Length: 368
Image (cartoon, rainbow, N blue to C red; front, side, top):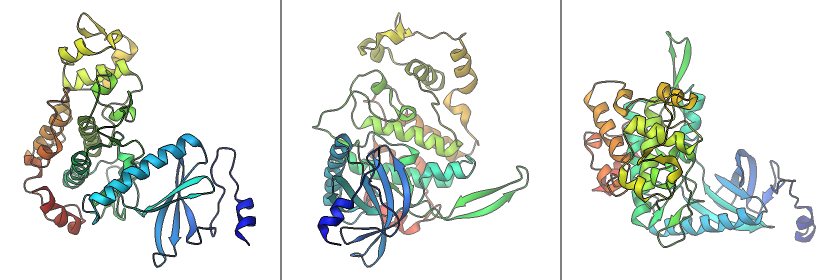
């Protein structure tokens, strides 16, 4: 049909999503295969890119809604900067191939990745990753986010959902005690995705950033934030990989701070003095009722960090030493990613640990 009649038949649903189905072609280039995911922003579709030799790509189609379009423009700006600074994709941030405006829908095409580290965990009954797998994933995340920080960017929304496997194929073993199949991912090569909230150092920093469970104390206390808030999120992510559950499972600021105190010790008095959120404190201490139902919940569900160790082996202790550095309350004292990469936990990393050896070999030189 002529472009004009095609344009007339482009339709959106009530929520502003582009109505499209398998076989539709956008820009005479992207042939829709299936839906990969959906979010408030729009949908991600698996497409055949006829100008990349029929390669499959992920196409993020943003709703025709102004605030999401503006967010997409900001994300494109960040992704273009990443492409410019890392043309060979050595630093493990998802690669953008192309973007365009399709009848009011911003569209961004990316390399096609596999399951997120969260979805894999969920589909595996929350069976945690092995320490070797955690080590390889941790190294890559630190490397990718250090690259962002070196380029004056804070991701601000790091969480297991935003760390994707390059390939999530797995082997299965049957656990006799638990009477269930358990999956082991074959390759732990990962990429960091979702730069929709990434913020340049010189830009306006919104007061609240990050998804609740991964939110740093300086953000909750509205003390201002920068690169270290990403490091806090990484500490929370690594804990979750190691144990299979969220470190701070809460939806309330006061309870979140109480959990932090139970796991990491008291909030530093300097932060308490400086915060404008004085309602959470009384006489320089967290105002928290241990005897309430919330108090009981925190007591029963949280314990000092080192008590979560699954083994007394040295690498497990080194791992906890690393996340303790990442979960330092004071942003200025928190471990920087350049130092994280030199941490003893990463010392004797086996080549291609947990699969993805090529990536690992490639990464090794970068941090030196």
